[in-house]
Length: 305
Ligand SMILES: [Zn+2]
Image (cartoon, rainbow, N blue to C red; front, side, top):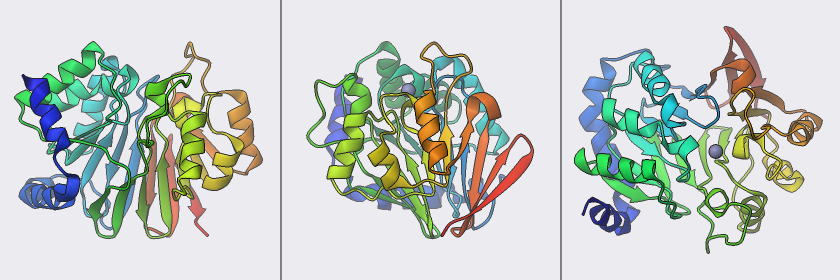
């Protein structure tokens, strides 16, 4: 019954998403304002160290919070603790890029302990146990569930905007991993700064994005699929032209991520690469003109042309 309700909700038009978020945001404004720390007028993205998996926390210049993926179930406590450390009570939006365990497992703990005002799901089907448990929990907590749709744009306030570049239409089939290939790539724009969240995109996804004329140019790239050799194709990287790349990856992982050739390609472009397995959590802040990267207690600054 709970699944049915979510599927129905998922078919509701997304037209009201921005308005809904704005209302939800206003409702939560007072409690959010009581918490700190927050960089006023700056966009901040925390790429958490969740081992092998992805979890990125976005805080918009207006203070809106979006969690993109939540790592493996084992990383749930880490993500919860990180959110607490950032003074976050309830999230404005949790966005799942695709239904693999290394992206959604930790979201159970997040929804349980923090809650979210909305959940944005990746529509490509993949019903693993954790996913079904997550849907049940969202239903119990009465969290509205929407499906990500290509072209949808979410106003994050104070000039920051999040745009869904996928999922691919029609869905990609017969790839190495169709769940990865149909993961939802998104971007956030703030001033001159674009941040591209490439999820676990495969080479076919990258080709589709290029063919679809999506705006891929971005100062910061969350490298697709933990830096695997099945993505980050030369044409895709040429289109993105990242100044900074972040690889979200576990130390000594069994998949041998990131691939040496991927790193080499990025290095040849002059891109500065940060890795959660070597650097730990990576925080990026921007005023819309330059990028500041905080890792291991030091700061690196990049001017965006
Ligand atoms: Zn993954």
